Amino acid sequence: ESWQREKKDADVAHQAELGLLRREMEQELQACRDGYERRMAEMRRRVKGERAEWRQHLDVQRSDFQRAEQQWERARQDAVSDAMEQGGAQHRRLAAAFKEARSLSSARESELQEARDGLARRVEELERPR
Image (cartoon, rainbow, N blue to C red; front, side):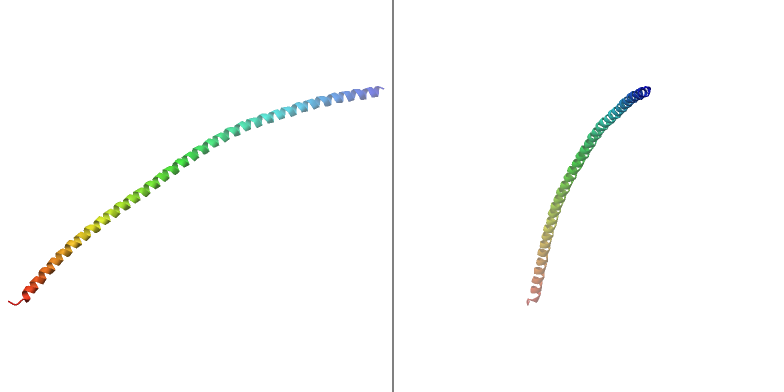
């Protein structure tokens, strides 16, 4: 009977020790879970903040790109306009130069015709019998 009592006391002590260990493990496990949840919440906040920063950075980059693209397009349009104006001005200068050349050519041709007519009259006068 004392053996059974010792065994029963040992079983009770063992059960009490197991219960204590189980509670300690559950508390430790809960502390680990709480720590994990805190770290995850902190990580989520940090990632959310970083994501917002990257979005803002991306928006700035996109805005800069659009602004640069608009400036490029304006510069391209200005260059095309300038080229058209220069081409038109050059065309007008060339047309004026050709007109002047035709005028000079016509004047020179008139002079040459007068000189030819004058020579023809002199030849005619020389060939006429006196």
